Image 1 (cartoon, rainbow, N blue to C red):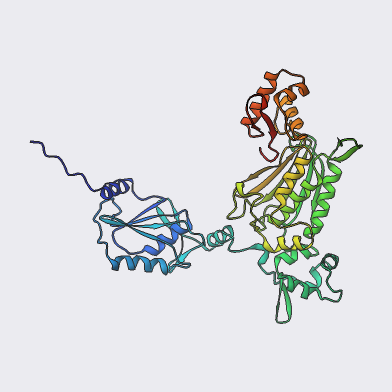
Image 2 (image 1 turned 60 degrees about the horizontal axis):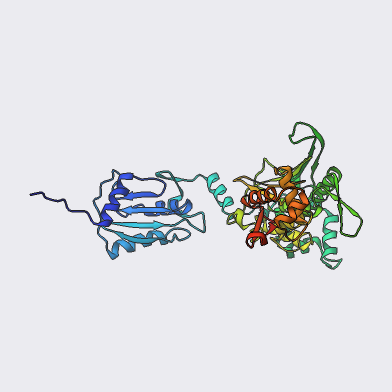
Length: 452
């Protein structure tokens, strides 16, 4: 007679797999409910994880009794964290799983300090690590910090302040300090106005005395590499001065192109639309990471493209897919000052205007490339410069000048066979540049102006 072994319950079978895998980035074992708070904040500060109560470090499963008292103890540990960690307690007989999602209000701490889950361990953060963590999470903002060593009487630029007054139709007799306080970029302390970094970089006479890397370097190169520099400028001063100097550099270093308007004279314009360049520069000045004190903004002008690179990736809470649909300013006060001065129509609309300006000029859409510590915007002077073969470039240029087109119309325009025209359109559709509607000979092809 064969005796069949009893199959373990589903929860126990799953726990055996968890225990066999051991502790890791997402799992922590506890024999009993002790030291839970540090593990909770560590997971909340990272990408979340699970604490299994009733599993030992060596993978054995002594289990634990699921009781109201134990659950209250677990919940009390979560409530004692600052801010409170949200958890879920799940029965995993004979254990309990405490599910800790990634926190939305980082950084979290417990009575023992700040912890972060790194591999199978919860490591305590140093002072500098806590500060960097808070900055990355948007809890500490550069432009809202005060500069106590700044003297409003000596370090502010009167011309910039007067321009602001005129733009906002403020009374001539309004004191500069009162204006800055009303804007939220200064504060009276013992009758002396204390300036924020936003006030210094926007209205300062020489902000680089306090924030050395707060400037823009512009360079024009002879070819696609950066080996031969034809012109260079370090645009310093306050943000408005940097903006005007950098735009002037681009205007004198970019070639012009000509467009023939329907039934009208030819029109001269920069190789890259002025509107797109201005929006990219405003975006860099407004959203760069000013805490990156060893880097500044770069504008690289090549014969076939212009690249804007600024320190800092996307602000916390924003993804590449969100660009143009959501506004998450890294420096809220600086963004507000540019808005009040009329340099931007509304906050968060710059990405859309860049794309629109390039589409209207029948040029490729801007390419956005965020990394962890930088953000790059690239404008190409032609479709061929973006990497399209000559024939495909001609197709896109033709479609960008009209609402839509058919295979027959394209074949006639390019003076090629219908099969060749269809092949070109099919390849561009696979790259997401062209879309179609309809069927058979009635198929209509349209350029997706914002896609790439």
